[in-house]
Length: 75
Image 1: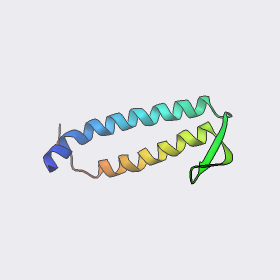
Image 2: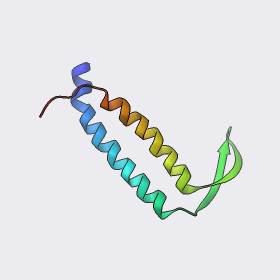
Image 3: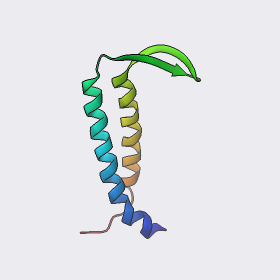
Image 4: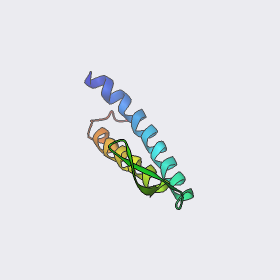
C-alpha cells in the first residue's frame, strides 16, 4: 500500500496544483460577485464568490502539504 501511495502521490500533487491555480484565476475574475453564504444549511450573511472559491483553495493546500510528507521516488 505504501508503494502505491508513493507512486501516485506525485500525480495527485500535480492535479491539486492545477486545480488550485484555476481557483485563484476564478477568484481574481470574480472579486465582487456577491452570493448567499450558508451556515448549518441555512442562508447567512452574503459573501463574495472569490472568498468562497478561496476557501476551497486553502483546503486543497492543506491536502497538498499532507501529500508532500509522503516519501517520493527519485527521478
